[in-house]
Image (cartoon, rainbow over all chains, first blue to last red):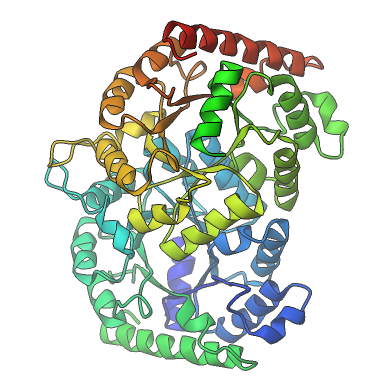
Length: 272
Length: 272
């Protein structure tokens, strides 16, 4: 899905919500465990319940990989089930030497037909470049929302920049606003505002709203650009909003609530 | 496999060779494609041919993941086939927020029973700590052997250290020499010597000897410590030493040649 289609979807749904499909056998309602493929059954019902409010789905690959080959089958079925006009992001945080990154790109872009993939940038240009394609999205980790982000990303370089600023500015030279996004954690809205000045046009994928403490309105104020430029992810807050047989209804309510808030923000910002 | 057993194996085999099982359907001899599982058949013959000369096997997970669920089955069969006294390393370069890293650790340490896993450190402490277990090895990317290593790892911090020095020193506070190693590229022997002073006791896993240009004797001189402390990886130079029906014989010759050189180095260094 290209940038134009993504923006069109956002305006149509009045939402920049990404739903994280971090589907965990230990957390899904117990009645689903009777199904042949409880992971897919859960995802299917979550997708049905939230597809009118979400413009992206982001399965975290760890949750599928841990189940062995069967987990990858659940992932494939989930992807096949997601409507074509919704962006699909493999949250896999891959990155390796060029030849190997090319294979990771083929895996997620071609074998599994994801639109986008998250990338760990530590190994530099030749680990990032193979993920750049005009019809796909390399979503590079910039500033993450976890406590450990302080350990390396937030170190000051001799040139005065912070490591994550340097990483994002260099990567933005390799990928343009039509094929690259950045992960920027919501727990630090002030940082997002500063990054928006440095990286004006690329989309930011923002995790950490809700459970991890970031406020949606703060993130939007700091991160929106004239093309919207934001995808805000919620995982647990939506998919585990309920724990009983009505989990999909609860998920729908939670997604709708965030979408309503996003609609207000987009209206107030004059973006729709 | 613990540190004591690993060192014992190295001394017994007079080898610190790790064979990279980067098994690629496009590169294996064509006669193997008739088998039900050509990837496993290739690995099986490579393992039979090299197991007397190698102390570790390192499948790069990208090569298996790209084949879908079947690739993970080939990987599982390969792991089951590797003798128990040889270290198994998942070259997966994983790293995520704590909860998710825990799942990646379970996947590779428990579901697939690997002894070790390579880790991308960009997300900091809570992304690295879940991989630390007393009976397993977290192998953290320090200074990699690719050109892109210059982009971020080699940047100078305001405190005077290079990013990779800071990363390795901090990680060495989280994992000790019995549960953590570092990836240090062979293309930069002078850097290895300096790192050995900073990190005296941890094992270094060194890729990039041979095809990528590093010299084994330079690497050994720079990186050996009193407990040996080195694993040197060769992938293509061994597994694709031949391309015909005699590929396993050629792989054995290539592995034996490296082992012989390692034996000389260990003898000259007084380590065996």
